[in-house]
Amino acid sequence: MNRILFFAGLQEKVGQESLELDVTGKTVSEVKEYIGKQFQLDRLNEAMTAVNEEYADNQQKIGEGDVIAFIPPVSGG
Image 1: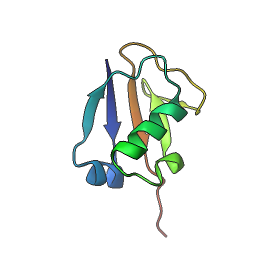
Image 2: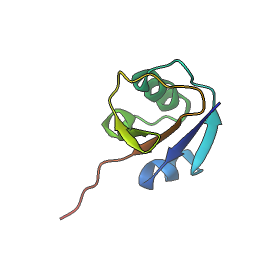
Image 3: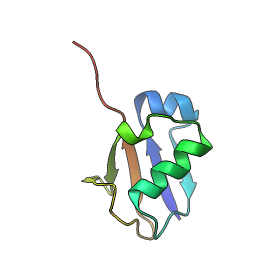
Image 4: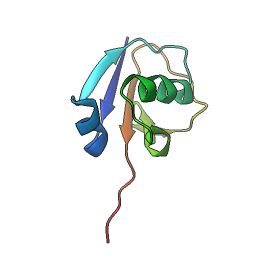
């Protein structure tokens, strides 16, 4: 089982700060695609991803118990 964290606008769109899913063995890209479809997050691919508090690229595989965080890009002036 994995814990998936959402920050800022993603948290608002999902309606909760985290959820539990078993995505062990999937890549970050596959997890983004699955969650993007489930919660209609069209721009999830633009979010930074961290696995166990370290930034991860889309090819990284998720292990058992990993915590995945999606952090949307910051904008402003």
